[in-house]
Length: 265
Image 1: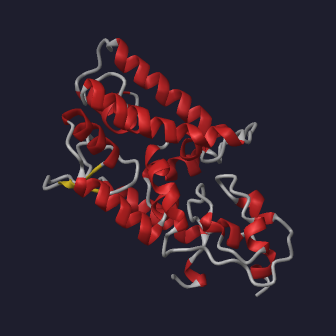
Image 2: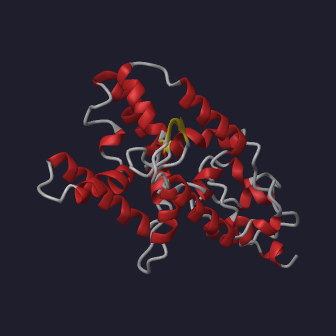
């Protein structure tokens, strides 16, 4: 476990910036696209080093081949770290954190919306590509907002612009809707639409990396307010249970940063 002094909002921002640059710095080629890193970072991006597990799952499902390496990598990372990469490494998570700072009306999403990402994982990443092939317009990759941001838009600009096909317009419309969502709802994409988050969420219960409960919790519930994914860590803190056992926790440690008990120490 990293020492308390290193778990700060500034440290997380620095790691997020370094991860964004590090994952997308393949200017000279030599990518390692056979290896998946379980974050939302499109491997169709010309600068991306690694493969996106969602793209790999869609591709393999289309050929009806089991993705042993991709699934094994995801399970290994999940057991070791849970959703730590979501909170500290994922470029899409970093973008959400920045966009939520835009002033304006904010909303809390209904609790049931967190289940949508599991449906997307099962249906658009696995079932439909398996039935209709990896190139089906109904796969997650065809509407993925991260793909639109990192691949579709740069390719359109580098190609000189021009008229867009309907499926590209739909993809960009999905991107616009997601960007609006994350401006008004903190980590809305993580909670509702991220299939990698859906795959990693159950592994939070097994993860070796855990957010420690606070000794002497005073039940002020400031951690609930600080939590970016509406996990409500307070009941677990009060019961001296790791708040990261919640499936939606992205292990950002903001609950501990906001704790007045720890700030007094």
